[in-house]
Length: 60
Image (cartoon, rainbow, N blue to C red; front, side):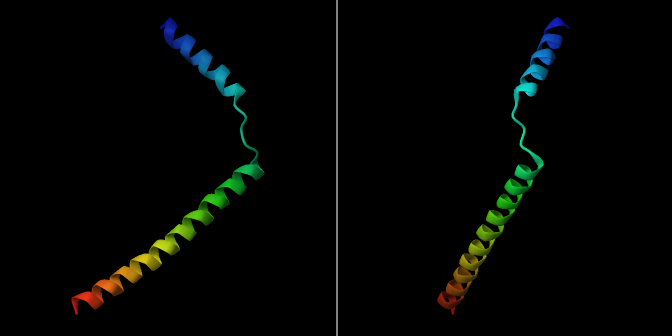
């Protein structure tokens, strides 16, 4: 039981040292990730569409 207490105490101490992002930073990073995800989705959508059209042309 002593090891668990020590582990939890050390974990709390380490969490206090963490430099947590501000609300503004978190929002900016989140919007960046969403934007990048949408861009990648659009690019992959165009590639998929092109490959489907190419396969259709090859099959016929």
